[in-house]
Length: 317
Image (cartoon, rainbow, N blue to C red):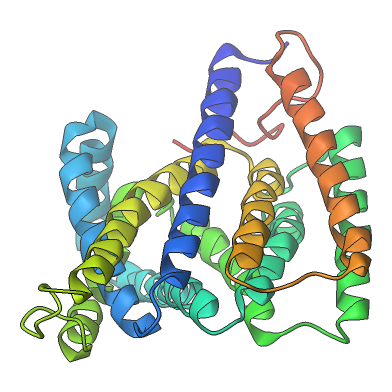
């Protein structure tokens, strides 16, 4: 029988993962609708306002307050933990910037495909570093996804660099955070705090920053879009990191397929195109999503084999 607390964590993890995927797609679309804005400037607003959003949310969450105190105590006892913390901040900073840069530079599909590859690399990371196990349905989902990804890589004569940055960078980020015990929202807020000086610099150096006159007239609409991206980014990352904590790495990785499906839709809305051969890429991946949905429903039923957690490894606190 699936432990009650494990099933509860799994159900909440699936829900917040889906919400995060929708919010990320909305942010992707909004970034692509800011012509004349540089990715650095949007990145700056996102860092500053995501941090501000988390600063408002975290004090009202008792568990977040506890995690914040624990995080501070650990770093005070072992200052060397700042080194992997800085590395994690650098990795996620590149990802946040790339997410803003791609829709402005006709590379939205390349980044979207990176997110299609990401679950596969996350599954591999889960198997190698955390001994995550896959039940038969999840194995079939992975196999179907591999077919689609292999076709895309073959037809495109290789993978674009934004694709590789996404699919290889995020697994390193999540494995690093779990290994050092920083897989929580206060740790992400600390990473944003490390990026804050750079974010403020990009805002001040950008053509639409405070004092530039963009807060008046035609520029004000774009400024409010940038501000909205920052606030929604805080909520999306909060949900995303909660999902990464409540789910085993392999299931968390497979659920990540929802986001790239939405990102492809956004890419098409922004003017990029897909040929008929793309059906051989996205068809198997959609099949993987269906299999994953069936597996998720079976795992949520009491007494159903295939627990949402990993045998021998408790869910993250």
